[in-house]
Length: 165
Image 1: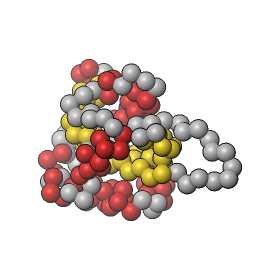
Image 2: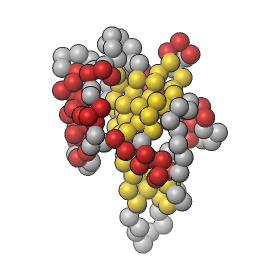
Image 3: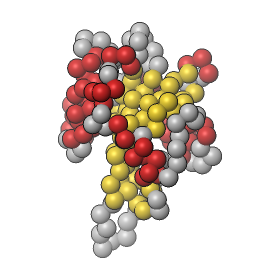
Image 4: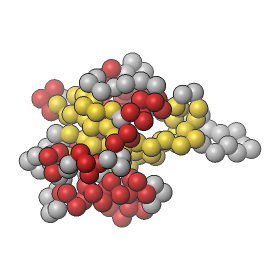
């Protein structure tokens, strides 16, 4: 997604736009920053909504959750820290792995805006996934922030949710 389109999409969620700004400042003139470039203290505003994913290139792009934010655990009802994305035994696993594949392949930030289910309620899930690399060549980690909000009910019948995280 071109940067101007990403910026326009992120105007809908100021916290995601601020995280993208931080990522851009930290990368400077490089294609992407390294994990060591971003201090945990700088991420405090997003901590409960953050996901940090290790990318195991030698295993064909296997993804492991190094961090899965506490607000996400509360919202979706499960703890994924230390687990692989393949831990999912449902249709969510290919969707999420595909999202991470896109970040790894394109080596650029990716914004996702989907409908899903959290604690049995239909929600809008907005996610910004950011690539991290110590060499600038291959994505080694993905830093993502996820926010969910209840879908507004309308008098018309709503489309079924497309995914739950």
